[in-house]
Amino acid sequence: MKIQFLGGAQTVTGSMHMVSVNGLNILLECGLFQGRRAEMYERNQKFTFDPKEVDILLLSHAHIDHSGNIPNLVKQGFKGKILATAPTVDLCKLMLHDSAFIQEMDVVHVNKIRAKSHLPLVEPIYGIKDVEACLDQFEAIHYNDSITIGNQVTATFRDAGHILGSAGILIEANEKGKKIRLGFTGDLGRPDTAILRDPDPLRDLDYLITETTYGNRFHTHTGDPEEELANLINKTAQRGGKVIIPAFAVGRTQQIIYHLHKLFDQDRIHDLPIYVDSPMAVKATRIFQKYPDFMDRQTKRIFLDDHLDPFKFKRLTYVENVQESKNLNQLLVPAIIISASGMAEGGRILHHLKNNIEDPKNLILFVGYSAKHTLARKIMDGEKEVRIFGEPHHVKAEIKTLDYFSAHGDRHGILEYVDFSNPVKLKQIFLVHGEPEQANTLIDAFRSKGYLNTTYPELGSVFEC
Image (tube, rainbow, N blue to C red; front, side, top):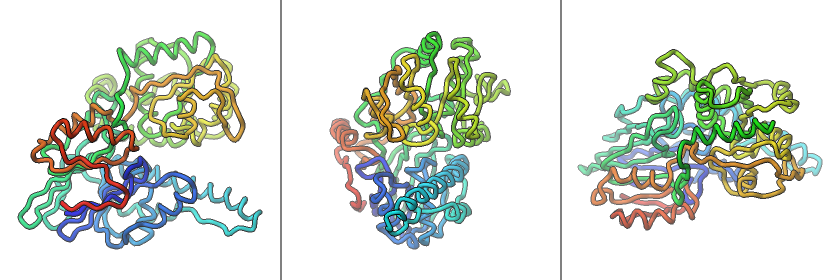
């Protein structure tokens, strides 16, 4: 068995790894590399392998940094199946279309500027037609079913608890009489997260590839996070302000809606209007509503057993068209506005930040991870002036972060997950999908627990089992 680290190595974007065994080339993920425009275009267009030689793609979940370059993979000759859970298949159809649309619109803007300077026009990494061309290759599989994918090679998907349909993937191979169990966490969720079931760990492994997004930190919430959320909302409403929540359209938005629904039903928050202003989030929520069987026992007990929809209640309004979104700027009463993107790098959230960040009555509430250099991170880190749509804005609103709502396991969660494999049997741990400051601190922690062969592979590195 050979493992090649082709993306998401020493970074958190563009996840992609190749496993070769028994003449089979298995691609784990095909994420979109996101960064500066020129580098993004170069990295995503030019694979370091021939897509025609890939036999099968195993996809852990639908987030674009894990699935976003599939249309380009197919465009360049990949003909195999793409295995994923049913919710992941549906979410990918939504998110890949959105990714292509954004790229096409972005290129229109860029080419107007280039044409004025008599520069060559550019093409998007892929377009809507490329997304349509790849969708027939998706095949939905069930959790815990062992699927034969090649000569004495099977794959099993187990619930990762990260977003709806997310999975850790177990590859089992019998190679020349030698049995190998390779685990890949995808993005690892955390226990007791609303809506989702707890992660179902991959056990008794010989090799493990694990994400390390929060590898150097612990989730810091104390007490009751719902009570903290309620207190922040009520305090803001009492002073006549709005609560602006930048949230990822898939996963985080639905989680926040769930908690607000509970708080509203229990009369723990003021009777104020709640708006979800993100077309992507609205469509993603419909997919969540389609898969109640993927939700945890608490969600079933509180809502589903009584035939209630966790994502629909009296004070909640889903905003889809542009005019309705613009009308929110004229609100003169306290309200909650949830909008994408979570890192405030694009989308309707920018308009809401522009219109509300300079009013001290308002609250900007962050509920998840934000990468370095993003607008969300700058605000979270306390910068007093930020640029929105190229214009400076003074940060006068109250700023709060509740990392309880993060969908990633923290340092403790990662270490605990690995404990399901014996240090003697687990020959090698590979740390991916994390910046150096997150991953490097885990190496000593793993080694102190007896997992001596723990590495942080570089992009392009190869390991032979």
